[in-house]
Amino acid sequence: MSAQLGSGFHSSPVLRSAPRATHPRGWLEALRLILRVIRTRQDLAGMEPRMLRDIGLTPGQARHEAQRAPWDIGPHRG
Image (tube, one colour):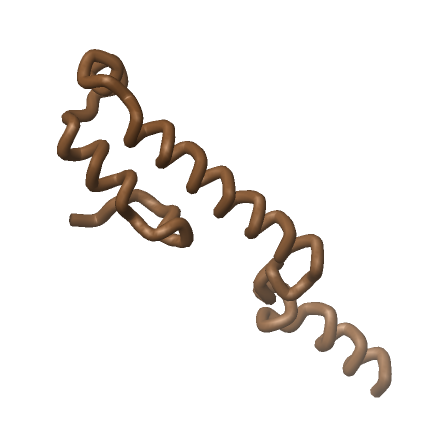
């Protein structure tokens, strides 16, 4: 019976899908990502229109992206 409990414990979908951020290193990686997002959005806000054209953005799109919250990391939906 203990073998059954052990195998069920390891194959639990809840345990396999636990967020990585529960581990201290996961929190550190999340913080690093947010800081990188802040820096790149600041860079984007400072780009000249010709540079924005090179990457396929309008000044309005760049401004909107730069104003997003740092934790709003996924693609913009809307």
